[in-house]
View 1 (cartoon, rainbow, N blue to C red):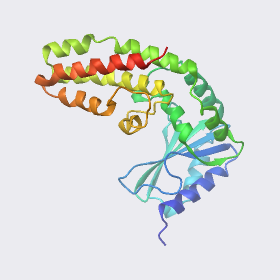
View 2: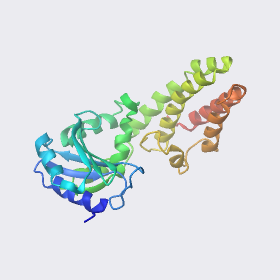
View 3: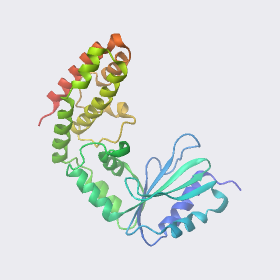
View 4: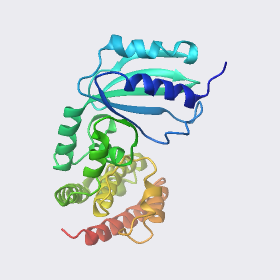
Length: 270
């Protein structure tokens, strides 16, 4: 008998929810339609009083028997992605990421308090964790941990907004590398400096619009829905990148960029 991915994931989720330590389970993306092989991963976030030991976690995966094509325990142990186990479901990489409730709440409060205004190692954006919680699909929530957290994140804190804007405006005002690259018409160095600058530009733009910056993925689509932004923001950002990709266009790219940054500054009411 062939089981589809949805059936296998539902069985897996039931097994996980039966663990005494587990409080809540959430999933990014759809909870009813799952990707096919090559289309993406399945990321399942599991919040616990204490993280079940590896033997317990291995046993619940083993209950799937021949429904999966392979698994590994403890791919990660702690850190931004929790204690993570991996399994292959109909060719789709599926990640089980375990976190404790207490550590999660502490991290979220630190983020909202503005203690992590920039990306950390491996391009982990702390505000991206807030964006994930705000949009997560809840699959199991014994004591309403995820429900309460989603409610907590429904408003973007004024303090965080101010800290993020000021921190990244300060970084945008440091144009030494960009100007040096323009003078030299050094395309690769220009794009190195530009990528750093774009990162800060986006984080200011998201903060101005009281939106948790998720990551660099699909940012242009999100920008389209913002009310506060420089004129023709998406088109001009793309032109900055395009014209900066060859020596003769770097001056034009930097001019467009500088104008956009100045417009963004005027939109920041801090």
